[in-house]
Image (cartoon, rainbow, N blue to C red; front, top):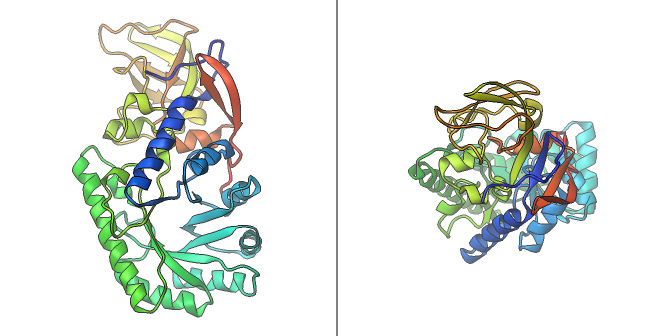
Length: 364
């Protein structure tokens, strides 16, 4: 069933179906548990304490975050086990903040360069509680991370800097695509890269406890063995990209932007009061247009301005009239959530709760 908008909703805004959300969370938790993986979901997708609490109660061992500020927000909300899955480059202010976090929670931080490791080691020297580090490995996305054969030098430098290297991690961004074969290949690439890196570090005498991978597209392709921790994020809501590449169905979409028809300039198109400042501007290569309309699945959001979305209809399809509410599923859900102050929780066409996006804009 498509996402239902609440009666009388003020648009634009983001609405969440809590039943679909909880089903997505439970399904991922059970899939991870049944295959022997620890689950450390990425909270940069939802940035919400209420959703983090649901994930942890379902069995997640902790959260992954992208920034120090996100870690600070979730620590303040009571999350005690956090991994900054990012090669943080510390200035003086960030060094103080990481050290303070280390005294408050169980903290892990990503590294991917000798200079970065040395800065982190200097910042944490003499701290009351240790910060564990994971080395980021490039498994094929070619964004950040060292090649598997380069982890030995970095592991030694991190140890020399006084850091405790406990694992390796990667992001399989090249697993996105229509073909299931691409997702399977990305999963195999991850396993090879992480396995080689972990064995290299163990050969240096390091106690590698965590081999961390996984993304929403590739989670279903993992084989137990090498990897022991997964960090998917988008699965809580899913989005138009996940729908297009086949990793979810329409009934798995838990979030949509609520919009109103503000213009009907011609029978084959209409205009909504939602634009890039609500939907984000992602133009996914796997999605036709700037979003997906569950009630008009053959329609295309062809043009997007800051506060306008132009929707075109195929021949013979009747569109909504002026003032009609319309749900739009974003291409990439993480950006719209980061733009919103709150999420409207809707059940049976009524707003039953409002969840603050507590880590909104937490980019430092």
